[in-house]
Image (tube, rainbow, N blue to C red; front, side, top):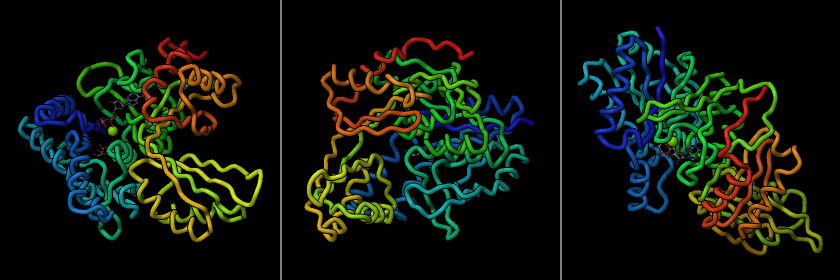
Length: 411
Ligand code: ADP
Ligand code: ASP
Ligand code: MG
């Protein structure tokens, strides 16, 4: 019997009407005779609301308490969906991450799935039930509840598909698939029929919210094709998989953006071996990873400035971690800017093919957009710019690289 793993995101279960709509969709598939595991996100903005609630009682909520609090959002939506299914005459049972056997490490707020013991889910499927699993959460070996990072229900779905040996994982959301850029910023954005794991991972890591990066990584590791499609419309979605033609397409596939970037500059860092290692070790010790890092060798004098970026939500913790170390090593100060955004062009061959970088920089210059920092990977060029200019910049680059035009299929 075919096993289907589906995931419905927050806007797809935003209210009880939508939960009933999802229940009807799932019921229709169940009646076709498939075994179904469904994972859901919290309803609408529930996770944001829970974070705001915590902030009303303390400025520094404990990571452990925060995870237990946030996990409740997904528990609400999965129980309601199971009830709705039962009401339609479809046997269904809800499971928290813990009950579904999802074991994670203890990095609260961004835990990684270590393993899944699918025994309870299999027993549920064998009884003819739809298994409805709360997304975004797991449990440590010490039985503390963890969450997988914002957007992490996608990862729950792909991890479950891997653990249960499903052939594919369906991610249902509020857009019809993966587009050349966020379709909410650029109406000309074009839906991609398919995209490789590698390109999707890069787009997701650089802010394309439509997929959680870790979900794409797990799909690639376990060879699970991921279909991204609409929860509302019956329209063909985007298949993320590993077999997108033999030759690199050598073209910009998409543009990602993120409007919540903060920059930290440590001024006058002593120009000696080990200074950067000390600064970044203390960030790592606080479970934070810097994104873009820029340090120029000092042309004169024994000190240099070191700049890195983090998500705005991590800025306070980054400063708390880094400031004492900077003072201790004799740096002259730490300054920040939390009104930045990042913008990336992604596509196989982009970095190694001459012309893409200058075209990107010139298009931004022509639009009067100043570039603060630049970073690259094999298949990506990223610019850090003023947050307020991100929408313009996305549209300008979409036009510059003619992403609205249909691609010819590689031969
Ligand atoms: P869900 O709640 O279903 O997980 P998300 O809000 O996490 O949905 O992700 C879907 C959103 O991702 C879309 O509404 C869209 O605005 C945004 N998005 C950003 N980049 C892209 C892209 N390249 N293609 C499609 N959607 C994108
Ligand atoms: N509810 C969580 C969030 O808002 C996880 C998810 O939606 O995937 O980030
Ligand atoms: Mg999401």
